[in-house]
Length: 102
Image (cartoon, one colour):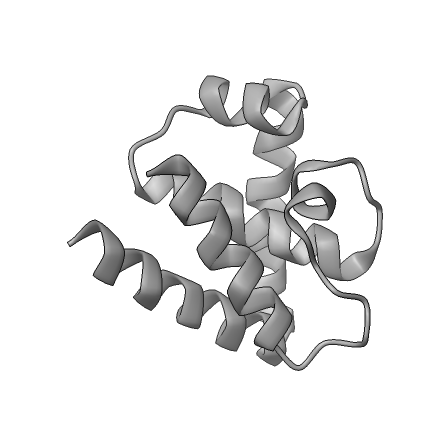
């Protein structure tokens, strides 16, 4: 399930109207500071929380501290308020994850 949720975020990030920097699984799970990678990572974190994963599990997956994951969650809320493209991409991912999880 975890792997499939990551794949959904990567797939939706590729199809989103962001620039030419392709989001890969390694970019998403790595330490890239690229704006698009950070946006995709924020979407992933929130989808994993919605799927029932703990912040501790997510922090181990992304190799970040628990505080770092909490910061990503705050970034998600800011981006939802300020970025239309982010809101659209987040909604698409949420729909696909919901369909996958049933």
